[in-house]
Length: 168
Image (tube, rainbow, N blue to C red; front, top):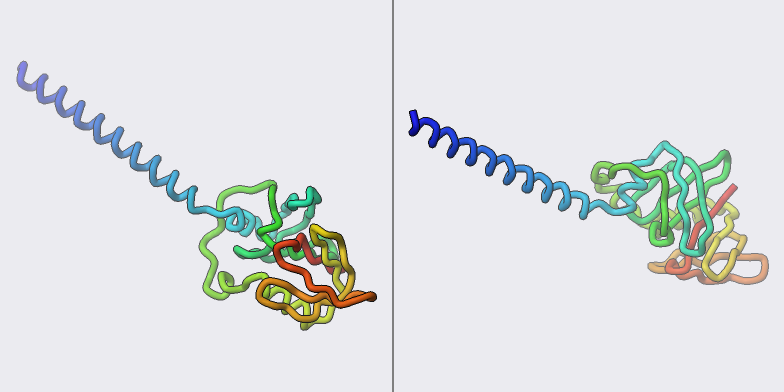
């Protein structure tokens, strides 16, 4: 009888050690998964829902997430559309978990592609930058900048200073 008790105790200790090891491994896997989730992925998960983002100049943009990928998001409120580079976002709310991995086309649709579509459309836009706002039409779109035709001049805007591009 005593041997049975000893083996039962050993089995219980072994089971507890396995359970603790499994729990630690699961916790580590969760931490690793969360560490790989970007802010853009979490914003993308809000597609079709309201989102507010605070930009690096302290201003807010709010609207329904119409499109989003790892480089930019498109917010809509009525007829207004706001293209926001993810790099300009410093706060976002409300957010939940991440969206599934983007498809190949979505993953390749960078900021340049979105700006080129606006340029081809010829829509008048309000380009908001850290150096001020400029109303006009997008002309050329380069690798890291875009040209805006304003009533006074053609100005080149570095993407690093771009906060948003708005149309009505």
